[in-house]
Length: 114
Image (cartoon, rainbow, N blue to C red; front, side, top):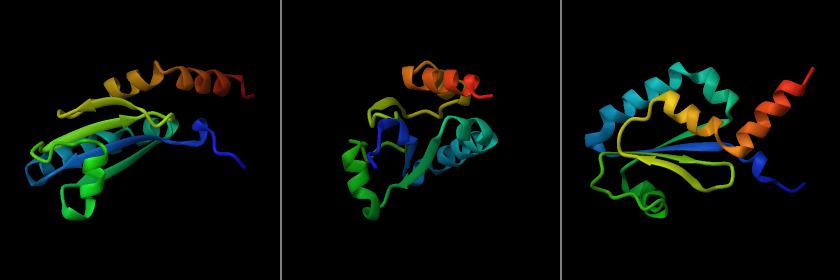
């Protein structure tokens, strides 16, 4: 079976170092509070602490190791849709996702289901 882009979850990558740990915790709280909406949009949340173990991930996404906190949204197509060094509010995140063509199609097909 071929995996299509629609089979890929959207991803939120949360990069943080020791200085950004409080920001990361606060961001996680915001996302956990919206668990239902996160799930509806098929968003997979991955935390990537700043340590040698995750250095390749930091490099892959070109995260400056001096940044305390970086939020990245990856679309189903694997492309970066949003990057922020500030916490991202759920209304901003969901607004951005809901405006994406693939999400619009998903919402339309959800409405067509009996």
